[in-house]
Amino acid sequence: MTTLEAGELNRLRKNSLGVGAITFMVISAAAPLTAVAGGTPLGMLMGNGAGFAGTYLIVTLLLLLFAVGYVAMSRHIGNAGAFYAYAARGLGGLAGGAVALIAILSYNAMQIGVMGLLGAATAGLFAGWGINLPWWVWSFIAIAIVAVLGYRQVDLSAKILTVLVLAEYVVVLILDLTILKTGGDSGLSAAPFSWSQITSGAPAIAILFCFAAFIGFEATTIYAEEARDPKVTIPRATYFSVILIGLFYMVTAWLMAVGAGVDKLVPSLQALQDPTTFLFGLSDRYAGTLLTHAMSILFVSSLFAGVLAFHNAVARYIYVAGREKLLPQTIGVTHSAHQSPHVASVIQSVLAAVVVGLFAVLGLDPVLALFSWLTNVATLGVIVMMAVASLAVVMYFRANPSNQENGLKTTILPALTFIAFAVIIYLIVINFGSLSGAGGFLGVFLPALVLIAAVVGLLLAGALRGRDPAAFERLGQPLKD
Image (cartoon, rainbow, N blue to C red; front, side, top):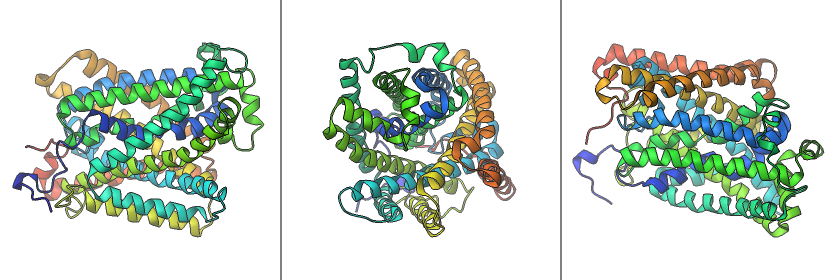
């Protein structure tokens, strides 16, 4: 067993992740193949058709603007609590407590929701090979594997995720190049980037689907305590992640539209019983069945990479909340050898098993219920945290003028992105039923979970202020070496 120095006890494993490792960790959470095979066809069908590629461009630019203030603050707040730490240092401990619970809810909801789609996709894949098992069996197997990896050193997860993500990119890029070479259905066209296409149909819903596809990129700062030279590594990984994800989504969505034919795209999607088979149909048409089979397998591995990445993210939020006394301190400890947040990891694994088991017992659909309901809650929660982080950047640098870098980076752009996120939050709330398929009481209750989590976090922070004022004042502070 590795012997640790006294200063390293109860800390995450320092200097274990470089730019590449962190970039692949967060790209894994965004699950690129899942986004282009699942979210993109649905966004095209329910949103703005061929204009979805142009919408990806707009969302990529907005997230790059958000990243400017986000990484500026990362140079001063190196805490694995990320959004929570930003809120605590910029807006005060009460706001930090609220964001901590929103983060724990959101990343749990995303990870557990994707477990539903993973179980269903894996069941479908193995059924084609003559192995018929219920979806929840595969979800429980995935929970067990993720539990082992999350318990161990983070660089092991990073290595696995790097391989899986590279494979995802390769198969989709092969299809992209094939469509590009043949010219698609009716020749290459820039129409998907025209304003008339972008604003056609339901562009608000398209924007929401695009944002959902990016969820995970913002987790770069979660690994600040484990990064090598975090003041350099975290900004680079954040920008690389947004640019790589955005370009990949935008180009692939453009070529999907071109492959089907810009004018034929929506009718083609409407004719499918399951729109998520659209990408695989294009693969059959342009690249052949061998690539389609590989893509089907990698679709499952993409989902697995996503749940592993989100597991690591939520475990770190739970760990930091325990370490800083918002939650019981027994949660905020690291493993003596792996320096992983092992207690928080176990808690997340148990919670995932309980929720998956509940949906299985109730006979609820793993995709239309478990996946759709929970991932939309997660998307709302993450965008709320982005809005709070944008405001926190402005307030932090106003309160700490000695750290001021540039007014454009620390005030103007964060203020603009705060306004943009506020509008997007409004759009999600009023469209939540349409997006998630949750009607009636659930259509109101599910988005309200974000508000409930915020209130619980605020109460926990208030209780900490009463019993340990010094700990309350330290919320979100970077750890000292």
